[in-house]
Image 1 (cartoon, rainbow, N blue to C red):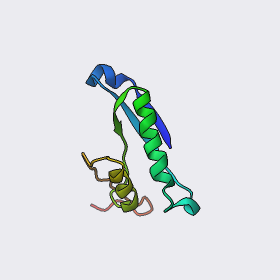
Image 2: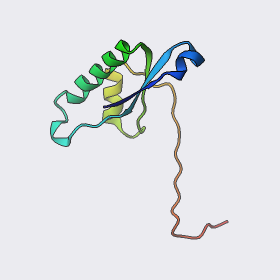
Image 3: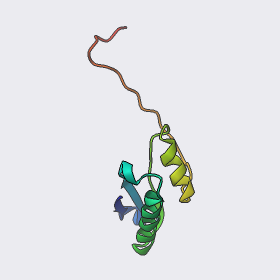
Length: 93
């Protein structure tokens, strides 16, 4: 887990927000509860730092991660769409 404190949110929102920036589990450790335990420990750490809100994100297609986040109490509050275009072909009008 890579965690960050968004200290400026205390002034802007009246609450400090913590962000889980990056989460990863070694393939050999998946399915053993490691990610759950690590994420819950991160939430405890954020609480100790004075955070009232923890924010994170993942790709909509990453269903295992979405399930884990919801199991840990996260709720979907928004979504976005990413667009991609290959540069190898000229742009067609």
